Length: 367
Image 1 (cartoon, rainbow, N blue to C red):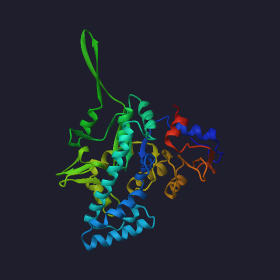
Image 2 (tube, rainbow, N blue to C red; image 1 turned 90 degrees about the vertical axis):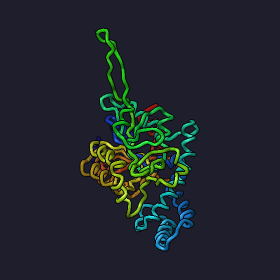
Image 3 (cartoon, one colour; image 1 turned 135 degrees about the vertical axis):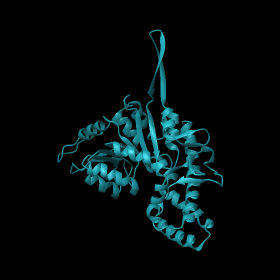
Image 4 (cartoon, helix red, strand yellow; image 1 turned 180 degrees about the vertical axis):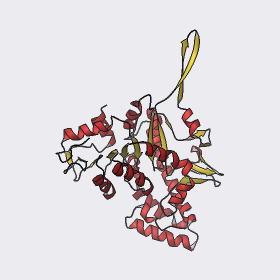
């Protein structure tokens, strides 16, 4: 895929980027894809909301003590993952989860209405549609993994006519049942053979969505994790949101919901050898252990398309021979930087917005 030590030119880079899509990748969707639609999805905006709305909810002295440490870290610019690193009080975690869930739900509903009506275009939508449409009939599933809680991708898929499953099956209150969920993607055809109708079945090309940190429409109801869209804004008191928030209890909660949230995603990641990261900042320790093993130890092919790079991305990029990065260049003018560690110098493209996923799709994949 690369020519070690050579010069990275526009022709070489574009050929490598197009070649990446010769085989189906597993897609990681990060918060950058939601922020591209609305800045209110950013961690900075969420931090402001938490700092404003959590204090009146605090009851115990322990809650207040731990929260003030979190708030101080957020004000100093630390990300939520590290700011909540010392939170032990579970009631505080629940208050933060509910506050975050309520805010993200309001933003999500506002943005998703615009997407479903066609008033806003989700930048990753056209690319995902191409990836699904070009799936081979023998391998009709595109796995998408995301830590995002919002419903932007789901609404974009509905608007673009891209089928997807997320493991839930049922009516208004849906429960995890992957076999039943996948069965909804079966299509039957009938042909006349020897004067008799014969039926055959095939699977529609579709996305298999893994929301590994939960979602604003996931709740615990009794002993089950359920999906209910009617409870997104104002959930009843007898349920709790299933949203895995940062902090020391994160690993414990991930294990609690392993079967519902993680098992199928872990299996999908293990099977794949090609990974596409869209707006993904590599902030999650759990996912990063898989990513590093795949990209660095196994030299799997990878492509990161994001607005801004960061030290975590750079660390993996420096160690992964087959990983490409497309991101925004420095300066006030439109610029794109393309990098791969096998080339000593990055390629800088002036007057280019190739780091925008919609523009990337147009220039690299056409349409």
